[in-house]
Image 1 (tube, rainbow, N blue to C red):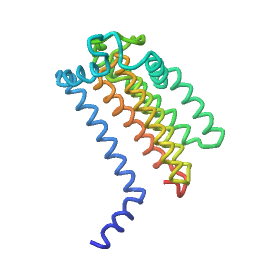
Image 2 (cartoon, rainbow, N blue to C red):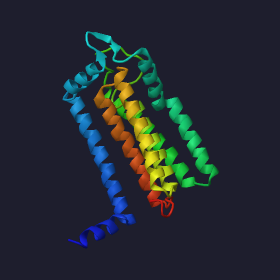
Image 3 (spheres, rainbow, N blue to C red):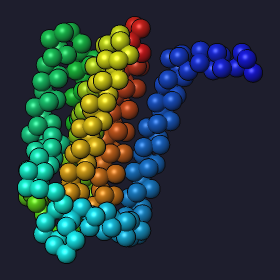
Image 4 (cartoon, rainbow, N blue to C red):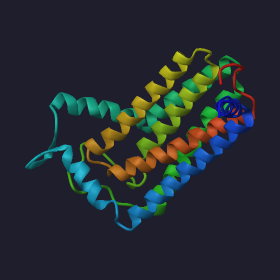
Length: 234
């Protein structure tokens, strides 16, 4: 037993073990997404979806989200972090920055993860064609299907992938943790904002997180397999 933990830790540090773990996590996110989709189609998420959305509205006044007008405006700003325009800008800037520093694999992973997330989000929206919530008034303009949340998918894929790529180049654990923590905060903030603004059910957001995280994990696997990881940074 004394030698078991060191051996286990030594195994987990090996390249093959990390790739296997990555594959497992990708499969887990895909299964989670499919499970949510199945429950959504069967209507099993409807009760909790309604309860969570109503919890963010002033009792007796569904037109008014909880919080002041300043909070509402701040949430609208946060939701823009997952919008197409800002995600494209972040992706282009990141790709150019990686290319400038001769990190071609990093640039490829960044662009590939975001494009794959966008394509899969649009395809699944068309596939499921879930109507937008009509329980409360929408606080921002919407024009596409509800499942999964495109903002949640895109922000998760873009910001988690970017944080992962930055972490792969950093030697300090604190810097890695900072990049990943900031990305997670953005992802959670964008997802919350979609429900707060009444344009997505909570299950839409959760599905978007699963889909986007899956592509970020695929990006991590590609980075590992193509040797883009800085030695000592993994």
